[in-house]
Image (cartoon, rainbow, N blue to C red; front, side):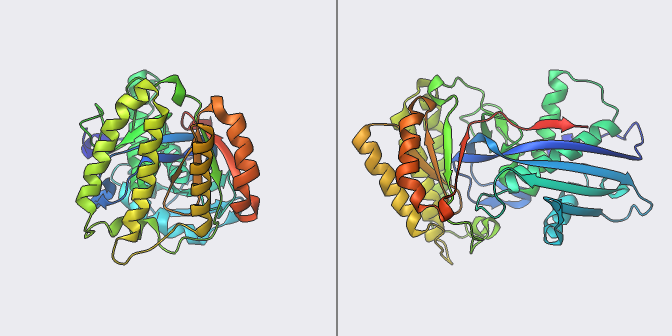
Length: 366
């Protein structure tokens, strides 16, 4: 598919007003995306677990307006008006206007809330932008008077929602569906593309079903370097090309691991990917470190516990200090006890979130 496939035909009907609500989850990358080209195109492919409990619920209320020359919207988080969110959404609307030409026809009220604590250090851009993209797609579906609920029609809906979400936040394109999503063109995964996320199409061993992710909130402060800046620093990074090559290779290595259920091999790749992501930050110019002392203490505790017990606990990191502790459900009782007894002490205010693999976004009302 190309971008042109997402430009709609003239709408068949008119709408004066309406409301739609979607909830959409966050996700955690196993093979990391770091570095992008123009138009939110990833420099390398990534694969992620869709989460279940960390999600954003967004209600979009729209009403027809007279002036159709500019965007008109207001944004609320937990009932509180958020002017500081408007520039990012304005940029998003500009990027997607050619694919959703009704955007200037309506005034939008965007009401959003997260299941995880605000400013918890968990990025809400993936869940937030995907939820908003889905709401907008529901509006377009009404305008297009599409009654077709066939598998093919739903597939296009999800693809376009993922495509739009990507233009708001790259990782948001991996939050539309679950449980494993690939984003980025790769010879390893048939049907993969830079334009949107696709469901991982191959056999996955039962070891990876119901996989657990306990998120340790090490630092809830705002990152000193935004992800956008970090991605851009890959343009002249001395190790960028080798990193992109490594991501392709690791995705290829994961394919037989996901099929066989080899947890030890899985752990080796996932932890290496997490540390490589942060190595890229530490070796860019300017360089920066997003891990905190307690991040490293948790990692060392995990390594020691794994060595002592033989249990399949591992970590991954996003572009921040928080630690995602990954483990199979069948080992969850002992590992969760270890987390509560040994690791929570390193979390800010003792905060952590228990999550697991989920299956994507849900329409709540329309």
